[in-house]
Length: 527
Ligand SMILES: Nc1ncnc2c1ncn2[C@@H]1O[C@H](COP(=O)(O)OP(=O)(O)OP(=O)(O)O)[C@@H](O)[C@H]1O
Ligand SMILES: [Mg+2]
Image (tube, rainbow, N blue to C red; front, side):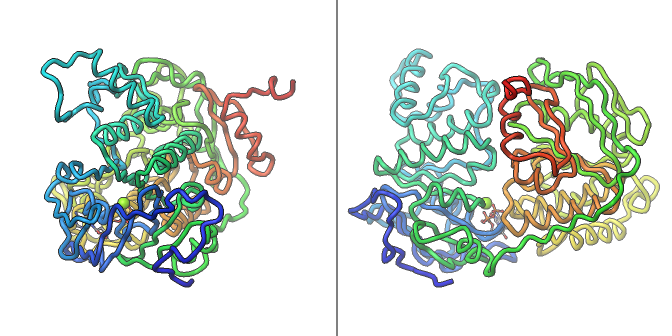
């Protein structure tokens, strides 16, 4: 693939030329950043123009977040410099960056749960009048909502909002502080397809008004849909920067991984085995005490993947938690290998061979302040040979951790490294490796490839497929319909806390599943 460092030489024919004047807003030059054992950014140059959406693409660990942390003042570069509107800047903190109009929305939101949307948006309001009433905050919030085309209820508290709405609050907060450059670090990995489209529209709108938007994503379709230019990083270096109109999915994939991408998932033909999981008439409440599961029936046999398709918030999270003993059950039963585990503790589920890749890998899956080795043994430390009487056997722990790290191809410089230093992809590989080891019967995998690059996605999927081929049962919950279609032997659609349709994978198409996900029931469809 030819790199085109200038990029501008290519004519952008698809998109209207939003920035004919080509005014530079940000210039990053010769940026270097080293962490112990890794060169995260190596001699990176990046330009952002006013009025453009600039996609930043790269495999997990390529250095995208690091570069954006430097631009937004969280990290200082080892060398190199940044110019904003022609002026050299040396940010020592995010506050200094926002004062110069650089705002970032992190992948993990930093909102205050018990405050309202309006209060969150106005946290740190610099020149606030001496008396601020909820009414003033609500009015200002409405004004921002209208200005940027992002709608939230000013009075709603954060915990009451969906993920997509919380993200809008984050974006409004950054824009309210006058950001001219908006950095979105993997904004769509937590959104439903509909919400993602809405976000593209907002990003395009901001660019049309002369702001610059940096859009980090792993999804090539998104790069094509939203950006004017794209910069691709690999191993901390820029491999290409070009106009999006000159790119295709194929050419982007080739830049990204240095070769063309071919999927090699191998699904072994096997006769269905004995039932492993049997769920009957399951009822459970959500965090707000409202019914989330309303009579779920499902069963999964040995060597079978049951994929659950559905838009977030239709009970999938609650289902996954219930099947791991993490959520109280109101009614119904859960059996694993014929043994009744209803109302049993998470430990008893683990002891029955049930593993869990949770939705929130930081909240429930990994303890990011602990080392890779400690995280790897988190599910085993009570069992021999790692447990020796009341003590941990250090040698066995390391041996086990090494096995998990090697099997799942986690890239680490040392087993002692804290997990928070690992890139998203490597964290997910570690978690997948550990949980497939636990799941000697059933693995519940929730959004297992969220935030992963093409290569890591393929690795995690083939790891899961191998687990299936070895005769284990898998419950796959994913908002990525393609993933559900690629991986599943059977597909169930969840809507409003119920299973509204169940199919053999070969017997159903996207449209039909899409309709059911949106709540169209069989009768309406027939009519
Ligand atoms: N605070 C830190 N301390 C040590 N190493 C770090 C730190 N932050 C990042 N790294 C390392 O720097 C490299 C680049 O990480 P970065 O988070 O920038 O990647 P990324 O491109 O954003 O990846 P992803 O797509 O997974 O989010 C990785 O090897 C990562 O482990
Ligand atoms: Mg990142």
